[in-house]
Length: 225
Image (cartoon, rainbow, N blue to C red; front, top):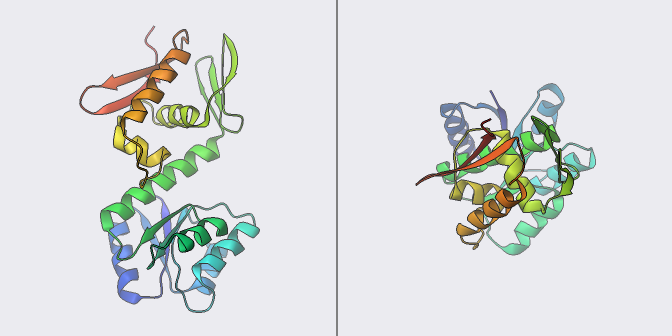
């Protein structure tokens, strides 16, 4: 079970987020401010932080900077009352991974939490092997019996994501949200373009198959003998 810390000084908002997370299979950990959050991080393993910006004492941006300076790469989803680009910029420069604007939409929160946890798992794996094919996350390379090739970042991440969850069907929208950001104006058909490019690269690969699931999306897995 993933353990998610909710750092929020507003009692009602904190209780609501904790309840939603618990109802959806997560283990929520409450913290009222940055000081309490840091103390809990010393004692507990936390998989993700839901972090309000406007906190008493140390604010959310400062807490994020402190964690990143200490080498802590835990995924952080920042919650802010402002949608100004300057605030988003401050958050990303501090080291946040994603942001949401208050009032928090419960469904959007769950989608963003799930996406960040998946990305974190993928980044932690670094390499993925299927038969005689190896994907190297750090080098963005695909190596098989034909040799080694460097893939464009979006193509690599798309393939790595699909193979990290073999036979799981992802809709185009899910893939867009994972790899192109939820707020992107890019059309969902760009996923089709990247899938077609990957299929061309994998045409003679004996291990990997990309499958179109009509009306739903795409999945990847071991090529049938």
